Amino acid sequence: MLLTLQQLQQAGQGLPAPFQLAVPGHETLVCEEVYRHLPGKRLAFRAHWGGAMVLVKLFFQRKYFDRERAGLKAMTEAGVPCPKEVWSLVDDDGGYFLATEFLDAAVSLQACYQGLSPSQLKQLLRDALGLISQLHRTGWMQADIHLDNFLLSRGVLHVIDGGGIEPLRSPLDNLGLFFAQMTPDYDELVPEVIDAYGDKAPPFEDVLSAIIRMREWRIKHYLVKSTRSCSQFEVARSPDAFVTMARSQKSDKLCRLMDEPEVAIGHAQFLKRGNTATVVKVSGDSGDWVLKRYNIKNFWHGLSRCFRPSRAWISWESAHRLELLGIATPTPLAMRENRAGPFRREAYLVTECAVGDNLQTWLLKQSETQVPEWLNLEVHRLFDILWRSAVSHGDMKATNLIVSGEQLQVIDLDAVRWHRYKASFVKAYSRDLQRFMDNWQGKTWQHFEQLLRPFAQRAGITLINKKV
Image 1 (spheres, rainbow, N blue to C red):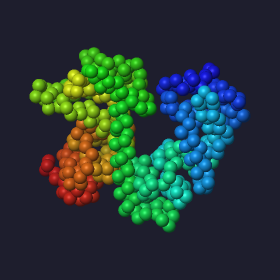
Image 2: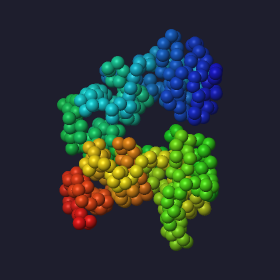
Image 3: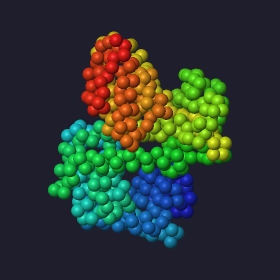
Image 4: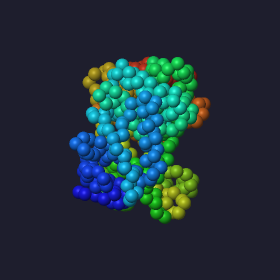
């Protein structure tokens, strides 16, 4: 399919590849894979040109083209490995092309860091810190410093995205933002690698504070995006409804479900018929989905909730928060609030269906009396991340913890809270610990009490066995 520059500029999300593009003064580009597309702004794709692969960035505004070239030049002069420019072109029709070398067999830090051994990851982090330090020493920083902008190709770590290179501001925050891309359980690696930054490396305590601050900034930025139309989410507003869904999950079936959720509930398998919430299982595109309707019990209940974000909204944001923190939860697909002008009414949340038994049922089915080591690690990691992130779940009963394979998934998120103040967090976290322990008795209680005792000590409480 041969496309023109004007067609590309007008193309919406979901641009299909492969396609061909005629470029004045150059041979026809054959686009084989689209990496990023911001409609009407820019397009990044892998193309075949001159007998070799190149990465082409096509901009529709001059300032972004100039920024990308200037950033690549700054990194080259700083001695930071980055893609080399092959050719560039300014088209009379308003297209700005920049072709760089294609990094062969490249893998990003984002794609690989969780699968690496500690020693491999430490070495990569040290390499990345060395590159960050080189930029900082020459007065530059990668402002958009996420892990996908570090590519490992043929044993060499490269920095990409010249458009994110800006004059250096607050080196500490820039370091914090780099480490904040990883889940909180990796924070313990920081003191072992920070010396790779060089003799101006800040103290670990300062870096840790910056990581916590920048991680929360990053999460809040993402949550704002999750309720507005952008490259990752699609939002539809009308006088009687607000709907948001993940673009990657959008389908005809999901759109119909959000248009007429009550029709789906009328034909679905009920999982819960509650006064405050109704939960059903519906057939999805490639598996089951869970549709949860948050009910309005009566006039006074409706009046108390009409000006506040619904519990579906809270659960939607909480699911994304937990995913960013590395806590497993069923993938959120879409959310709808019924509205009458500014007043909120019933609300709906659609997620993937967690496959498995709740934790209590799963443990009762086991023939062995010992809790498996992988489950110990999952429970420990859950409470560790909650502690490091100042997040409380609000209802740690066993039915809200689903064993799926060798993974513990957390559900029922409408009481999840991030706490700004330590005192309120410690109180809520202590309740989570005790509520989790209230699920157990006998040897199981003793086992989990020993496992979680360090967290109870941090919170300044003693766990109580209420079933003795």
